[in-house]
Structures are given as C-alpha cells and as structure tokens.
Image (cartoon, rainbow, N blue to C red; front, side, top):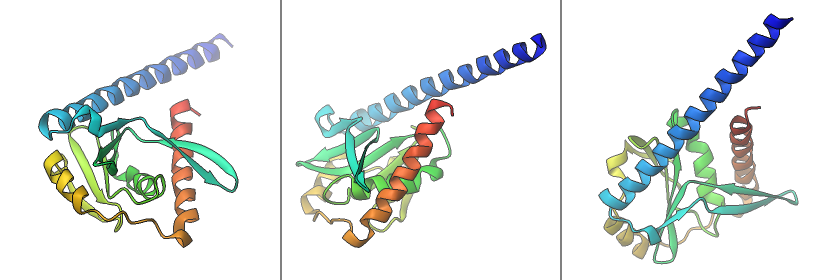
Amino acid sequence: MQEGVDRRKLIEEKIAGTEARAVTSLAFIRQAVRDFLVHANGYSDEDIETDLEFEITLDGVKTAVSVDYILKLRGRRFAVIKCSPGALGSRDRHLLSFARVVDSYQIPVAVVTDGVRARILDTVSGELVSEDLAAMPTRPEADERVALMKPLPYPTERMEREKRILLAFDAIRCTEESGE
C-alpha cells in the first residue's frame, strides 16, 4: 500500500511543479507583451486595460469572462490580447468570440501571443491577418484606424451562438487552470 501512496505523492508533486512553471511562464509572457506594447509600439499605460472582466448573460445565467489586455484609444476598444504559453492557434476561436460579444460592437483586432510569436486576427471576418508580432499595429497606426472606425455590432441572430462558443472555451480554460 505504501508504494501506491508514494506514487500518488510523486505524481501530485510533479503536477504542482508543472502548474507553478506554467503560472511563472504566463506572468513572464504577460510582462513581455506589456513591455512590447509600451516600449516598441508606443502605447501608454492609459491605452491598456488589464484583466477587465465582462459579464455575459446566456439563458439567464451571468458569467464573467476576461482577457489579458485590451487596447483602448479615443474611448473605443481596438484590440483584445490573449497571452498564452503555447498552441496559439488553439486560442483563435475563443478570442474571436470574446471580441465579438463583450462590447456593444465587435472589437476589430484579436491577438493571441506567447510574447515572441503572435496570431493577429480580423474579428469581423475571422481571417488571420498575420503570424508576426511585429505586424501588431503601433499606437499611431491604431489611432488612425480608430479615428476611421465605425463600430460594427455583431449580428443579433448569431449572438447567442457566439456566446455559447465563448463560454464553452472559457469553461475548458477554467477546468485546465483548476487542474480538473
């Protein structure tokens, strides 16, 4: 019986170590992305909303969802940014749904990044714009786009479906984070 207990303890320690490294990795990625936004792309701290929570209501149930960063210029949200330690493409659909339903209009740019690589998506079309972090719009470029931007709401008839997609991905993420 002792061997089974020792094996279980070893597995639990291994899992705890892996989770601690993942948290440290994500914190490093988040800081690297913030540094890139401020120092390389010219955004100010006032342009960057951090860990902002949004309430999504579906079937009478309210659920809080969030993303790492949102770029906001001229009072309008321009880009959502999700930091992820790997498998960037697996986060595309989740982030597109987020950008489509959390505000009264579609936030036009969705970015998934590990701090080195990035997937930049056009929210309205769902198209991949670039896989290069350097293609992320600088603040002057974003400011110009926001000045011309016409807020485009997500089609009402597709809203419920998009919310379901968002909440399904969010439930998977929560389960992964809790270790279940």
